[in-house]
Image 1 (spheres, rainbow, N blue to C red):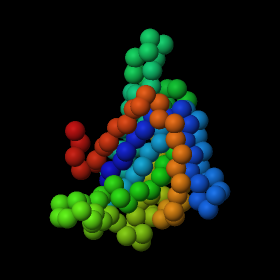
Image 2: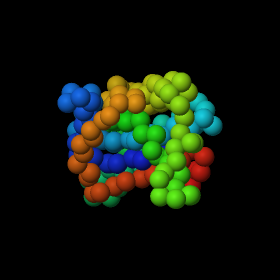
Image 3: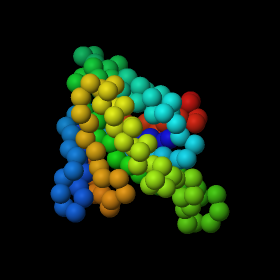
Length: 150
C-alpha cells in the first residue's frame, strides 16, 4: 500500500461538481492499493499517518502530529500510485488492485484512520473522476510504502 501525504491548510474533493470531502488544517492522503496488501499494512500506515510529526509546535519546529493539533484527514483513492514506467512512456497499472479487492481495503483504511484519529475522516469516491483542490502547507509532502518501510 502506498500513500502520498500532504500537510494542508485546506483541501477538498469534488465529484460531478459536488463536494464529497473537505477539511481545513490537516492531512490530504492519497492511497494506492495492491493485491499484496493486508490488514497489517493498513494498521501500520494508519498509525504512521496519524502520529507523523510534521506540524509546527510553538517554536516553529515540526514536532506535532495531526492528532495533537486536532487536525483532519481527507483520504483519496488513487490507483496511479502503483504506476510502472519501466517500459516505454505509457504507465502500466498492472500492480494496482481491481475494485473487488481495493474497495474493501479502502473502506478498512477509512475505518482504521477514524479509529486511530478518534473522529470521522473525509473521503473522495472510490473510482470516480475526482477534482482535488488543496493548499499545501510548507510545502510538506511525504511518501510511504508499507512494503518498503524506510
